[in-house]
Length: 599
Image 1 (cartoon, rainbow, N blue to C red):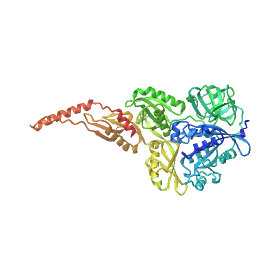
Image 2: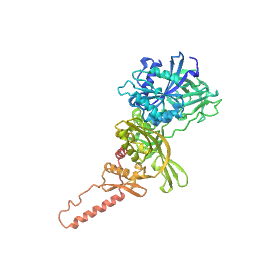
Image 3: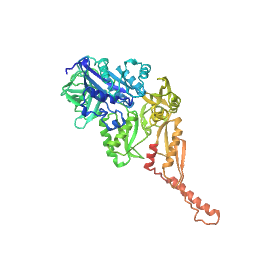
Image 4: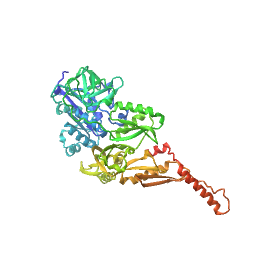
């Protein structure tokens, strides 16, 4: 097929979780004959076990299809399958910028959901042409007219443009392909002939090093040429270029508008930055493609091996994971309680969960992770700004001017009858509701601003509980905001235990401190003397529990006689306890730490 840029279409599929994005891409591959019937399997583009069993996409997978349209021409369609989850929204935005259009898939039974709204915002920022697809029309609960109305009311997309389809039953697949060809624009003609290609993903191959996925905007990429990464300035030699039919297929050159892969002598994924521009080393482009930014972790958590002898294995396991996941950041750290481990940075909670799950599953590591924390900006009185992810690094309170915490704007969708409880939940989490809008007769969308720290652990569980599973949530970053945040220490027998320190809001400190003290009282074994467990902010104690001492009945052998004989024995015991308390150390068992961190 000769290369004609006007017959190329680059598009992606965006949808809320479980609205049938992956099934639809399977059908498109089968319909265009990209895959032989015998190689076909469900969720073809999701290659990781974890992706298949959770039904989520974690890595983006591009694929090139050829389609003979009704007008008699043959088109080359490049589909970029993107992750749908908010943690990967930067990856999604890079994948979107490699496309000119998108299929917006909406479940006919469930209608527009939180992620649908957030994804449409992302796509509109990138000026993509959207083709709405109403999927699952064969379900008994499908309600197509309502979904068309929602499209108009919420997303301002004309409802009659939507293509009704069912990916599972194979209805409307041809209509979708025709819509892609006729409604989505071809790539723009390049302005110059100097090479500019957008990097939207990379994978690590044991034999060939890092393979980068690119979308060529201008110029040509072919084997043997010298290329340069514009953000790092590194030079490489191209060994091979090709396209995906889903397997990699080598071709002579990638032309403007093409989506494909490049194999060069790149050793680690750390050298490849998402959203970077590849250019010719000998004739470089004047400026990189827009929109590139460095990925910054949002959530930090310490990961420690349960068996301290596994430290080296954990180190190599993290290094291997990082080869395929450039967003994972880790540095070694040690804690008195848990021994040696790593402080790891993640894009968000799903990312954290997936990394932990992969460590347990693919590397069979027994690990424990500390309570996840976010990155705070601390403005000191001398004007210096620090970024702090570990409460132990906080400077002395007298030097702190203010502490700013990361904020998110959350879109919450819930049934009408749950709106009061949802508002209550948001205000309990120190958030405020900015706006509410009705989606249809039965559902509303709340837009709220919340501290990221408050939604880390159980926020989405709570939403599902309140709305009996009908609620959904998505969020995007906002600039950080200053608030009354303090460092809370836990003292055991008067000594602070670093593993339990945390940064909390002053209004929440007391309840959190009390809960921790009660938990510790259960798990620390009794000693021969009484132990106070206290939660403190600075020098002020805000909660306390006491672990009773073992009582030994010293007066048991004292039979009869004067009361002074008994008193003498009790006084002697009291002295001994006092002396023990002064020199005694409390050993907190590892199980106690693990229990508290689980809580």
